[in-house]
Image (cartoon, rainbow over the protein chains, first blue to last red):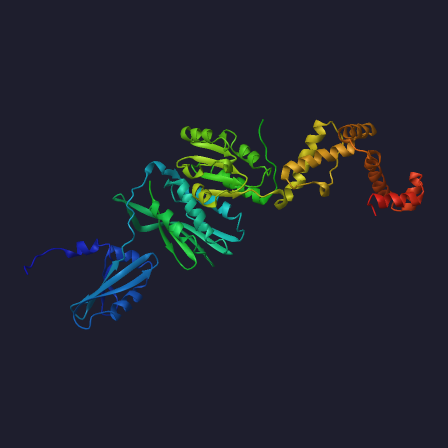
Length: 233
Length: 243
């Protein structure tokens, strides 16, 4: 092989798949930008433990197909590699998400105060469930474009999933450092979290359907639903 | 005339809050509830300047949807083409007495509000009785009218409640002459048998003895008040099924 001199770090840095280089004590020597976000959801120690557990027996690399889930991050496989005693690398591969082919019908998107839609939906929800509901919203979230009707339907169905719950907490925040690509444009993400002590699952399919049609990704958990809403200005 | 909406019900206040919050947004909402619960009055009060169309005129609804982006549709349950309607980019307020097809309604509307009937918002009964009492006093030029809430019929929501108030007003303000006239026109209309003297005498005797027993408790005292033999009174009570 011809030896070439090139800066591979640039390519690794911008890889959407997380790449982390540990020393032999588990200290991080290098991490790319995607890993920085991931480390907000999983500890360094947990990733290092995985690295050691699945490392190849000898110098070289080993790829393992195993699903890993950290909050909204889903990985389908990872590679562990090392060629000396002092450094070991972990490369995680994102599980592809279902691609939405349709582009946004922008004529249906209008500048909206999401807090108003949220409040109106909470008011509707409270007609059926008068239990304690806590709401934490980032008042500084600027107005952004939403398909008001479709988004309201999505909110109604999301809240209806918690109709039997007696303790619900809703939070709305702008996610830092995470983006969604729509029509080749990088958009910030607004995260709406609804967390409770019980959740019905019979509306999950419909929630997913409306979400997909509106470029909103949905994460269903045991007793909570997260909506990642594109922040379209 | 400006519409007003009277309510103390927290449920209705939550509906009002929801509509007020979405007033400026392009969302579709439906208000569903029994007849005469005040749905139309509420919508006209909240959206005084919106165009109103009736669901029984399908063509009109379709034409209005094509030209207007803000529309109120009354009698929504009467539309037969609901499935083909497109509410994208419009503010639609529909009013319906019932949900004819849950799937279609769920699909069409972002906000589905259920208007409680009067039996589920008892706090509004007194408020509405007072409102209609005022109306009756003004219309019939009556100085005093006290309505017994236990005698108010809410089986048909505000329709029967309002009727109850007018009926009470009439009952408590009729003169001897009014009652005679009522008898006269009633008998004129229905008298047509061969034993009508006895039949229609009960119209007088029943309330007479019923009221007497309520007022004087004892049959002995009542017979003396009425100036009839107590055996005759007992016989009448039996015949009129008042025992």
